[in-house]
Amino acid sequence: MSFGSFLQFLIDTLSLGSLYALMALGMVIVYGILRLVNFAYGEYIMVAGYTLFLLSQSPVPWLIMALLSVLAAVGASYLTERVAFRPVREQTVTAMLITSFAVSTLYQNAALLFISPRAKLVPLPDIFSKSIVFAGLVVPLRNILAIIVTFALLGFFALLLKRTIIGIALRAAADKFTMTRMLGIPANLVIGAAFAIHGLLAGVVALFWFGRIGSVTPGIGLAPLLVAFIATVIGGMRSLLGAVVGGYVLALINVAFNNLLTQNFLEYRDAFTFSLVILILLLRPEGLVRAR
Amino acid sequence: MISPADGHTPLTALVVQGITMDFVGLRALENVNLTLRQGEILGLIGPNGSGKTTMINVITGLLRPTAGRIQADGADITGKPPHKIAQTGVARTFQKVKLFRELTVFENVKVAAVSVGMPNRRAKEQAWVALEELGIEAWSGRIAGTLPYGHERKVEVARALAMNPKFILLDEPAAGMDEEESAALLQILTPIPEKKNLGMLIVDHDMNLIMRLCNRLHVLNYGKTIGEGTPEEVRRIPEVVEAYLGS
Image (cartoon, rainbow over all chains, first blue to last red):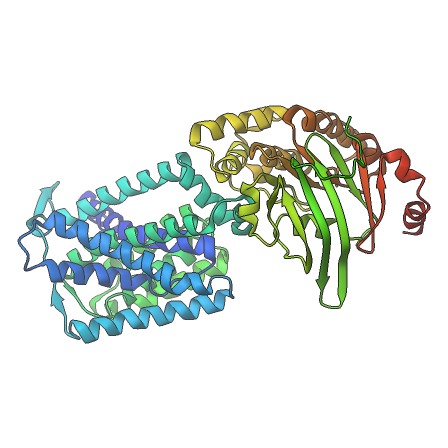
């Protein structure tokens, strides 16, 4: 492998992995506390996408649109917690899981009904379609941006979790949720914060996700949801670090198969990917990063 | 010295009145009255299954009593959720240690201080004070899950103390410790109630420890009070002697 193609491989893996890592992290932040795999997670990406679409006619600069669509994802996530999950939180985990399916269906149907079943173009800034030439490679700027934004966000969250009160409370709750309640930390505050972060990460991912595919449909959330789910399973459901690792590993597998498989086999890429995931899980059933 | 039976219930006390706790087919507590005053150490003793832990669970809101009333410092806390009760100044530890295993010792203690509403800076100070009180400030940076068992118990007591409680309920703080360790713990615990002006309730099987540590004892058997008073007084109650010899 030449240096150029190695660099290409590295950038592809890092940029795709960054999105996967953010998605997985958002998933685990809620799972860690409530033991809930939120199947409506992908719909927050959809919400962000439609917000971008609805704002596309407005004169506001793209950065403001982006900010608003991330906020819309945060709002959707927080609202779901408030309206749908909170009433069933004291019930079983299964009740919450089924609620999350219901919420997911609700969001998708609302999009079908009120917007359109057809794909809608999402406005993107010029910078997303520019490329830079670097060491003989043509690299899309959005890939570099995705990497930078992800590293910044990961650094920010590491600090938040380590240094702030809400961060320590979140980690404590992920460890023993009932105990944090007994200590006197208001459960609603911790869970509300977790869902806000959940939505924030989905919103940021959405910007780059749509940067890659360019349009939004009602069913758009399924693919990122699956990615997040598989990445967390690979990395270990109980660990935030594991989620990030899982995201990058999944991207590594994906990009590797993209490069290795011949044209005939490329359409079976996901089958190859999942086979490898199964293999990893056979060897390390708890995921790559174990919770202490 | 606090007199054990002065008739009235002072305001600065945790007062349990007529608590009955029914589980399906089992009456775990029956009409129990108990007062824990600030500054004293009260031992809650009794054979296995006599309702000691149930009593702590009822006081801290993990269980809702079938009948009866609980007041902390004059405020009715009966049936309130655990976090509200914690915020009124009632802290506890558990028979089975429940530390946040992935947090450091310091974070474990600090999060408790934060949880009762202290701002960051005060929570930090309070956490250090609590760690020093237990003599474990040297472990502050260790991940709690890596501590030996006896150490975990001390961290749990420090965590409860960091909440700056008016009442602290310790459920078998010396369980699993050898004689030397529990003697050391005794040394640490004895001065705390007076120094911090808090009421300390201790559940333990170790009669040696209880007799030496407590100002007063409250004895339960099959969920009923069978004796109350100073250790000397309780030792002379025939029912208590019988319950202990019979178990």
